[in-house]
Image 1: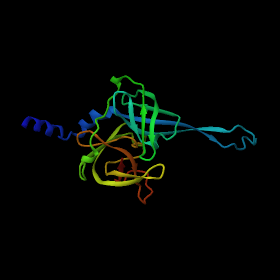
Image 2 (image 1 turned 180 degrees about the vertical axis):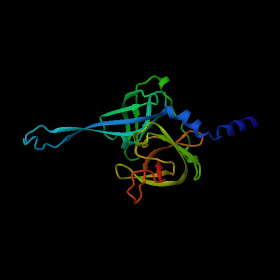
Image 3 (image 1 turned 90 degrees about the vertical axis):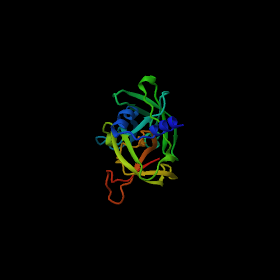
Image 4 (image 1 turned 60 degrees about the horizontal axis):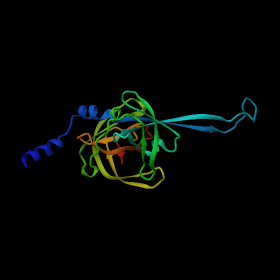
Length: 220
């Protein structure tokens, strides 16, 4: 029983931030969506019957691999109804992804890529019920479209509530002071063992109107 206890204790030992990044970053992807939007017809060089234009809109977010079959978790609001979704890995390989499932009520979406199992680095899933206020957490993602970054913080509060993209409340949300910025959405929030305990989803800019992180981030 002592040996079993030692193994159990070792499994709970915290990793260094560097070890978490080295192990988990290869499983974090950048998610890029492309949507073509029609621009209303206007006077085109003085011709009211000129051709309507199209504008390509792109949005960036993050996601993470959950198994060797090529399934990737991200936020619903990252992909929405975009017809084209690409994911890029840490080695800069980029490939098309199919939206397999999406749930606006919890702001979660599931993607799938056709990739060899060797190219996929699934992240271990943890128990979000096992985290407590004050626990150390880390977030890996692509803030502001930059390459993978890791930020460190603690669990600031539990059981927060967010408003989902369809306007319904999402309960049991984790609040953290790990820096989350636009582009981190859909990336993993990790416990001290490098296991996923949440999906980084939103930041609160408070009343300042600030676009950047002010120490209040949320993960589903």
